Image 1 (tube, rainbow, N blue to C red):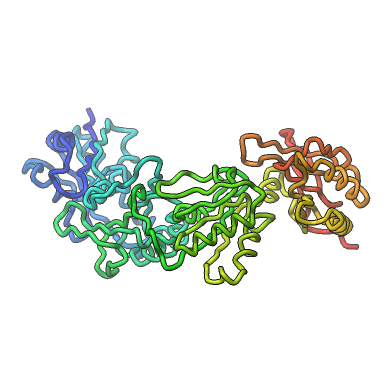
Image 2 (cartoon, one colour):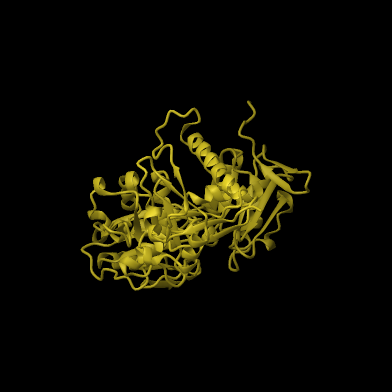
Length: 496
């Protein structure tokens, strides 16, 4: 009969943190296997040393390379694949001979460890048991003595080997994070933390629970001193102290996209998480997750200037303020209102940033296909801030230029006639069968996207949560084999 395979998690380094089951598995094993670099020293073996007997057969699995520099014809990946295949074959020979094999793994066997490569190659052929261990993530949090994640906070674990831009985006978007595999990646990770605005929160833990353990503020750590067995930690922000007074705050105008969290960008998530105060129309504020310590200031949708002034006054008192807008804040939304007020002399020293979001036109176009594939114009049909005569003139001009049209704010309970009038103007320049995308509440629970002929556009079906995309003379509506109708505008325009 074949022997049994154990993947034994040893914990973060302190032998006293090994589980009882890990000790039992080592005692039951005939063969003790562990990975090491060419120098032959194995941290895994050193952790379990007092449980390894003289009659144990030891299999030392020596990595052929520990950096990505290699002359192997398959490169680093090829060299490692060949190594794992050969190492698995050596373990399989013991298992076929009826011996029980325990593969030692620092931390947890299936958490960024080498054991998993043995596991994937052997578990379908042999009886296997994986024994979990305390990870370096848990050990680091314990040694820092601070909560890692609390309540509804999201913990993100990242390998430092990711590209810097990817690290920056993920660090900006998450609540709590641990970055593994520092060593040579430390400088890049530090830069990503700084770019994401999180460097001030970051803690450094080296060799948690081992001899030589070091804890520090990450910003103070010398890159030349950082070993592989270290992690960067962004701990829980629940109950974290937020500065009560800064010399100068800032206002960040953020777009939440057309609906909920799926439409937020990583940059926007980071700005929302870092804010002391959130200011916005209550409907849009409801899309933003609740965070401890933040203050929300909701208001009606029609007080944009007052809202902007309120946000800037908060920033003058040293607060970090996020003004929350739907869609993209620069497209018929809050960015203009904030910048208009910020241009006044008394707010000249308040920093203001605008972060983009997915605007309704792009969201609706994606749902329908690609109606904005060529030149297009965006117009608001609301006559609350400009006369209808101006709207009608621009609508006719854009229609006569054969542009696809994205019509924002087409109607509301108090504005019911504009869509019908717009249809009349458009039919002076467009064929009755011109495709029109009617998209309501894209991304929300009430999403409804329909494609109708321009002549059949019914004003009664249009409200403030609807956007209309009106095709050009070249826009096509095609019903595909699955019955779904798509709309697209060719990028090539016919020559005159």
